[in-house]
Amino acid sequence: VQLQASGGGTVQPGGSLRLSCAASGSVFSITVMGWYRQAPGKQRELVATITHGGTTTYADSVKGRFTISRDDAKNTVFLRMSSLRPEDTAVYFCHVFKGSAGFWGQGTLVTVSS
Image 1 (tube, helix red, strand yellow):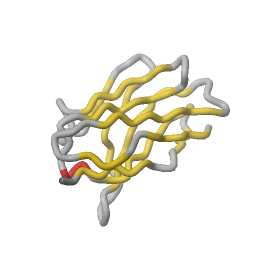
Image 2 (cartoon, helix red, strand yellow):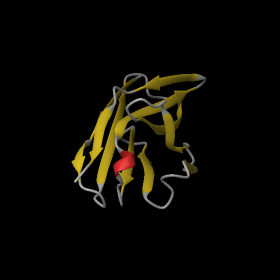
Image 3 (cartoon, rainbow, N blue to C red):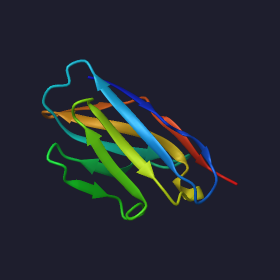
Image 4 (cartoon, rainbow, N blue to C red):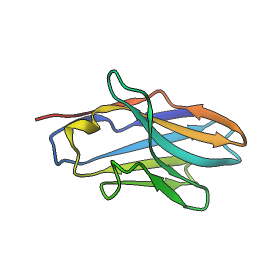
């Protein structure tokens, strides 16, 4: 499975961005899709996940501001980010599970700065 993330960029505090991550290759049986992020000097952390059935989970720090969704016809997962804060600055990585195997995308940088 190959994952291609896009949509990162620089935005002012309070702004919005939408990340996309398209899966290709052997995409059948992909179950959970998700987003993680890694800020400079910090460990990678979970942002949000969504199951094949549409069940979502969010980190407490993004609840009410971020929305994860998926389009299985296009093998794509999205992350809509609103009310962005400087502390949301990080490289965002998409991740999927296929069976027990996990796959990572290459990351896309989100910078929140005035």
